[in-house]
Length: 314
Length: 314
Image (cartoon, rainbow over all chains, first blue to last red; front, side):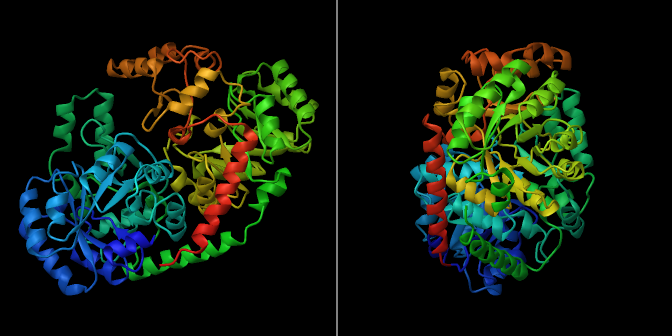
C-alpha cells in the first residue's frame, strides 16, 4: 500500500472519487487535509469553473490533490490546459483511451491514474505508461464497464495482470472493505458514495439524504445501450424501465435521457426527474458526516479489523 | 470463523457448493476428507440416485458432509425423506422459503443452512430458525438473486443485519478472497466454481476445460424474467440474446430454455447447446486440480496473506 502513498505523497491510501456535481474544491481539500487524496470532479464544470475550483483547493490545502477528467468531456483540451497552467500535480482520467493525454500530462510532472473495469483496459493503461490504475467493479455508482465484473473478481485479476499501483473502487465505504480490497490485491482504495454523504460534498442535500435512506436493491446499472450507469431507482429510472418494456430505440432512450439529468438530480435535488448516480454500497451508508470523521472512522475500523483477524484460529 | 467450524464439525470453514451435475459423492467426500464441508447437489438427481450418492459418500468419508436441495425441486418430499432416512447431518436449502422444511429437518438433528441474496431473505431465514445463512453475491454462478448485490456489498450488510453463522459465496476461489470475505463479516466461505475445476467433480471434462479457459467477461447473468442464471456465453447464450433482440415473450424464452439444457452442457459436455453455469471467478481459475490440493492452496494463501497484511504500515 506504500506504492500509492508514495506516488501521491499522502498519508492514507484513500482516494476520493472525482464525481460530477459532488466533488468541488470543498470536498477535495477536506479529503486531502484529512490525509487522503481529494479529487475535483471536472466532468460537470465549465473550464473557468474548474480553474476557480483548483485555485480554491490550492488555497484550502497544502496537501496533494488532483482532478478527475472523463475523457469524453467536450471541452477537454481546455481542461487539460487549465490543469497544466494551474500546476495541478495529479490527474485521474476515465471513460476513454489512456494513451491520449498520459504522456503529455506526465511531461509536466503530473501523475496520471486511469480508471478501468477489465483486464483489457488495464493492459492499455500499462502501454500508455500510467502511474496508477483504478479498477472499478460492477457495484460502483455512475458510469461503469460493460463486462459487469465485480470488485471481488476484478481486483485480484488486475493485480495478477499488471504491476502498476492499483486502486480498488466499487463497494468500498468502510475500513473492513478497504482491508478486504487490499487483501484482494489493491494498494489503495477509491471511495465515491461514502463521500457523497459528507458535509463537504457539493451535491444537493436532497440527494445526500436520498443516499442515506437508500436500502438494498435500490440502485440498478441501466442504459447499457448508451453508457451504462448505476443510479437510484426513482421516477426517471421508472421511465427508462417503461421505455424498455415498450422496446424503445437507441434514439428514444437518448432523447429520454436528454441533457442535464444528472445536474437536475444531484445538484438541484430533483429526486424524481433527475439522474441520481450512486453505488450499491449506499445501502450501508446511513449518515452524513464531515470528511475528517469519515476518514478517521475508516482507518480505525481498518486497524481494528486487522487486529481481529490476526487472532483467528481454525 | 469458529462458529461455522463448530456448527458443522469441520476443520476449515470452507463449504463446497452443492451444484447440479457437478457435485456427486466423489466431490463431496473429497472435500470433507480434506477438512471442508462437502455437499451433494441433489437438484440434478432422482430420489434413488440421491440415496446412492449419500450411501457412497458415507462410505468414503468419516467426516461431516451434507446435501443441497433447491426447494423448487419437484420430488422434494422424496428427497427430504431420503435425507432423514439416511441420517444425513447437514442440509443446505436454496431457491425457496426457508420456513418450509427447516424445523422438520432440525427435529431429526439435522443442521440447516439456507442460501439468500439479500437482507429481506436473511431475515426470513432467522425467522425460520436456520442454523446458518449462505449469502451469495451477483458474481456467483448458476441461479442468482434479483437485486444483483455483489459479495463486497452483500456480506457486510447481512453480517450487520443478522447474528447467525454466515457463509459468503460468489467470487471466492482463493485464500485471499476467503480472507477478504471473512473481513467483510463472514464466518466461512462457500466455493462453487473452484470445485468444478477439480478432479473429483462429476461434470463432463469438456465443461471443466471450458471453465479453465474462460476469461473475463465470458459469463453473464441472464434469463432474468425466468430464473436469473449466470452462465458462460456460448451458442445457447447467443440464442437467448437473439431472442431478446427480437423481443421474445416469456413463453418463447421458456421454450428456448426447454428442459435438460444444464445436463446437456455440464454433464454431457455439449458446450454449444448446453447451459454452462459458472461464476465470474472462473476467469481466475486456470487448472483442474485434486480437491485436497485446492483446499491446501486456499488455506496456505489465506495464512500467508494474513501475515503479509499484519506488517503493512501507512
